Length: 171
Image 1 (cartoon, rainbow, N blue to C red):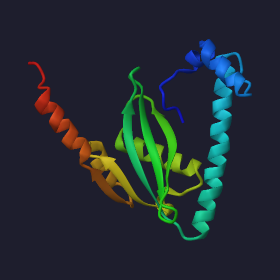
Image 2 (cartoon, helix red, strand yellow):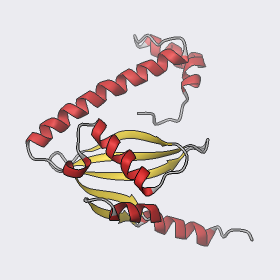
Image 3 (tube, rainbow, N blue to C red):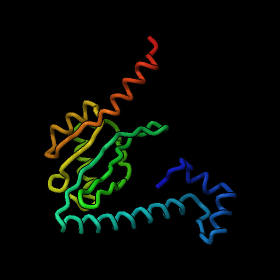
């Protein structure tokens, strides 16, 4: 998981990083495409492990919940961050960001989340019992259109209210 906001290009071009990695006995590809392939291969490997673990948990009668949050990057690209929570191990799995292309209605959002959950070996309608989303109006509508129990996270609203108070918009 990327935590330092270092781009693949920076890793590829930074001599110190390359030297440190090779000193530790690892061999990094020399180009960005090769590094991206390493990252995608690692993700695919971890995804298969998650799918296997989900199947084992389903055999034990596990149910899952999701937390979904919309994220807009500094390049103005929109994503859904979808986390999976199980009731047996009480683990949270970050299943990745799903890119939102163009306009996204509540029905598009439902379809995106259903497909993403399906990619991890779960049925949205049968295995997901709860959802946590922020208080945006599209999320309220989302909760009304699905079978799962929905919970709105009010921290987002408190944060936005505080920002509106501290940083009033110029008119």
